[in-house]
Image (cartoon, rainbow, N blue to C red; front, side):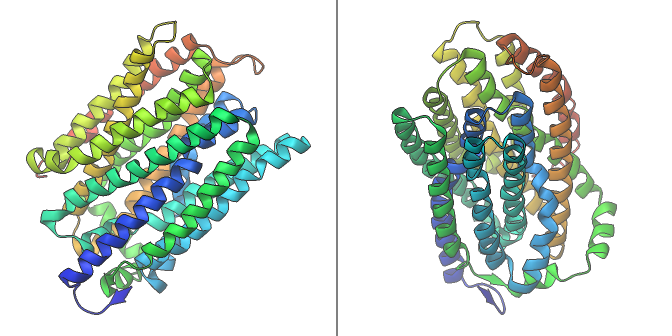
Length: 421
């Protein structure tokens, strides 16, 4: 809801409350139709390994739709814009769910196209919706409460996701078929639509809408001339490559490398979520003590340990050892995302936040998505010499070795970020 003047303390608190409720329902929704479930759904539909990597790239390749967020925000404001795109986002999920029918009818090519297109729109509409989240968070919080609010929201999101994952795991214990996964995805879409009404109740000033109306070319020139913006963009690409190249392929390596069931795979995803909750609780105190930049460097180092863990993975299935990469992924992903968000807000002037947020997300998202798609899918395609033969554990180890080498230079770019928080 757009108001004139500055937000009162009561309006900030009400906005934070509605944002928290939105995050709870959205977290429950996302786990029913997000990364892990879509990967399991694609595997059940017979998708090859490199196709899974393409789906993973859509998380950030969908950032191509970011300019739509600016256009809609310039008319209805940031909060209302996000709620609109949330309706569209969950509508796109039904396109993914429909692939079960086309699979049954034998239209494999059409099924593949719809799966990729639906994933692209799902993540694309999400990107268009959240592009204004950083300026919006800046308005409903103060400098003293911002890091804590961001961290606690991540924790709430993952708590809800954990509950949803437990429900999904119980359902899949009875039936792991395509139609059960289809029903879960549709249920998640319905919850996502329900959550959008709370986002539309968040207060904001006219500042964000007015900023979104500024000519885009003028903002782009200012952004490209800003040294800090360029540094944040390069660092953002490095950080965004991590969920594309490491997260989805860790699920594949676990499921196909060791041949475990979908229910067992979801238990590892549950552990990852619990680690994310812990990371969300720690991010506020850690950033206040060490600064967002130092937390970002530490989180990047933690995530780079994941390929090493996979390289040393035993040939036999060991629960205790194989939980380690998912714990590292869960904790470091939250620390990376929250630290990057806090760093961006702290180092971007208020009048530039909308435009800079759009270009930062657009460049880091599409840059990482394109690179991730080419690198991830390319490596898996080379490793899977025979389309009929799945990649074995040794093949996944080669993949993670290549990814480690490619991501290692990211430390250099993250160290170039300005040292002051």
